[in-house]
Image 1 (tube, rainbow, N blue to C red):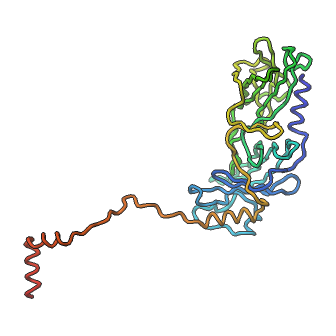
Image 2 (spheres, helix red, strand yellow):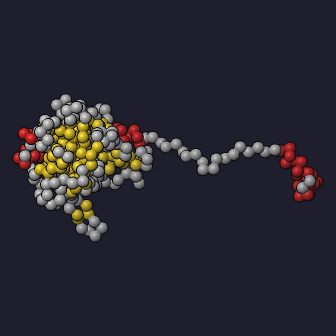
Image 3 (cartoon, one colour):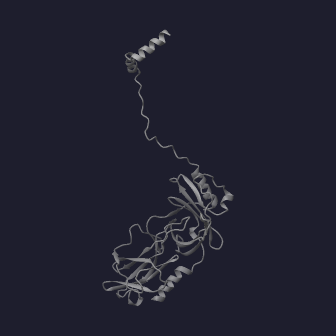
Amino acid sequence: MKRTFFLLALAFMNAFAFSGGILGGIWQGDDRLVMFEDGDGGSFDFAVVLRVFYGWYDDRAAEGAGFSEIRTRDTNDAESALPEDISVSCRTVFENPSKTAGVYELTLSYPSVSGGSGKTFRGESAVVPVAVIDGKLYLDFLVSTPVEGGSSGGVWTDGKGERGEFWRCASNADGITISPPRFKKEVRSFFVNKRADGSEDVYRLRYWKSGMEFSGDAASFSDGESVFSVGKFLRIGNDVYQCTTGRSTKIRNIEKTVSMPSGAVFDSDRTICALGVPYLVKVPGEGTRDELLAAVDENNARRRPLPKPLFPPSKVNFRWKEISELEKYNPFTWNRRNIDLFQ
């Protein structure tokens, strides 16, 4: 069993070529545009445009040196004086047979930064796992590892020949950002026991960040007469997570439900399960620098309409007849008229 889990983990992490696949192009989110353009040796021309001021201005926050040769940068208070030059390489973990979905690991290398005291801080690198399903990019997703039931399969010991799926978490970053992202301290995976009558039992498994060395060891939990086994450790990017304490192999505090989380999105081959809303959506087109810069120019050419006045002016009605009648009995007005008549 240990050898099986080790081989699965090894295949998942190390046995794939460097390639962008369906990840290349321009992607749009609520507050940013991100561009991946295929380069050499698995690298990307990478750019991030931040949509600031409620989306009314596009700040070319991160881009390579070649972008300024195509289009000069704006000089204003909203535009960064110098863009972040972040180098990105991509590793294709896998793509489904229909080429409509895939899992990728982005390695973002952030530049060195000079501090106020004159010291230079060493740049950081971060591995951000992402999944693409039908033109949508997700940061919270699971990957399926089918397992066969029955004592001979070594997965659980109910002897009924039922089939299960282990949907293991494969993501832990909070975004594709121009500064090092934050990574989750806890992640969740799901074990699905598919019964012969078509019903399912779904078990939610909690993994937390670990300082232990990754291994292919298995951990198990029981539900009455059945015993289920999964990988004790998960390797996600540069981090290792575990589901048991210390050297224990017993998983405790299992949450049982009857279905996967609501809103889960599966790819056509049911190999990836995305949770939550998409982080980015692919923009139709070739996904080149020129298209990205044209989109920035088009957005920055817009002008926000003037806001409505806080206290809108009311429609004034001057009642001149009444004003004239009142002025007749105003001594100051009467004296003023006499002066005007006889001067």
